[in-house]
Length: 377
Image (cartoon, rainbow, N blue to C red):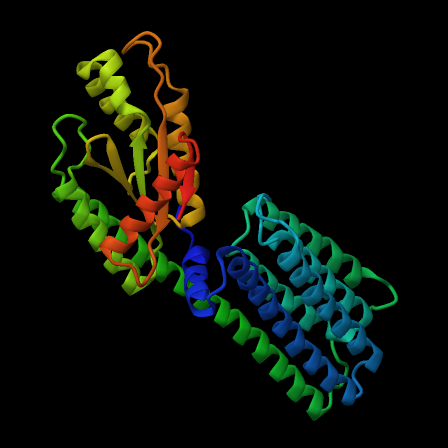
């Protein structure tokens, strides 16, 4: 899994609210929609002041406010109740951009004298969306905005744009409106800078973790995995990083099923080959920031740095499936190998003993449940 800044901020929200991962994710996205709703509210208030100044009709303000409220309600309900996780764009950024652009086109059509303000607001939409959207979707949204405003500007019924002979109040409102547009665009720029700085810190932390792994690369002589003595300090450092910066990490325990019977039936030489092959299967599935160590006998421990519970479970499940589906006949005809797995995400209050105990308990549940399976603590 690639570390996303949304995942980091989601981790903080989860710690503050005490909600489970799924509800925290939904709440986080509703909060983002609420920020968009706040932007609509600012515009609606300003257009209301223009209505009081006699620049536009009051009903135009009501329509625009209703459209903004519709955006807030519609996408908040979708994020809270609908299952959007399997979508390529789970935050529905492209759909929200399209809705917001159409709202500005509608506003320009109803109040052409304020078209420059609606066009300016579109810049906010693109400033926000460009932080999260793919280039193809961004270009499509730009095309919709270009065509829509082009039609509005060329409609013969509205040949004049802007306010003719504006009063002092209207000039003041125009100044404030443009200032608010600039302020929101500036805040989005700051948001982007904060994202880049946070990403830098996360990448630096992962780089340090990788360096630690290289420095402590005392390997198990049989399998080539890290020794227990080498991987335990890495888990301790990951605990400290999680406590300081909220960087998610997981610890997984993996144990070979019926390994004694493999030694008894096929011999210890075959058992040694199985151990080495299992480590190879594990490494095929790991990312560069992850490490595997031999915890003892036929038991291995994984440190998945930068992985939350969901992504960590997916990775370990891939390990389990890779081992189970591998061809073991080259070691011994009729040989079948499987592993049982338990995983625990590191909590801010965890100690080395507590996280290993939770992962080991999950492993025990996997064995008690029939083996060749993964259980999450």
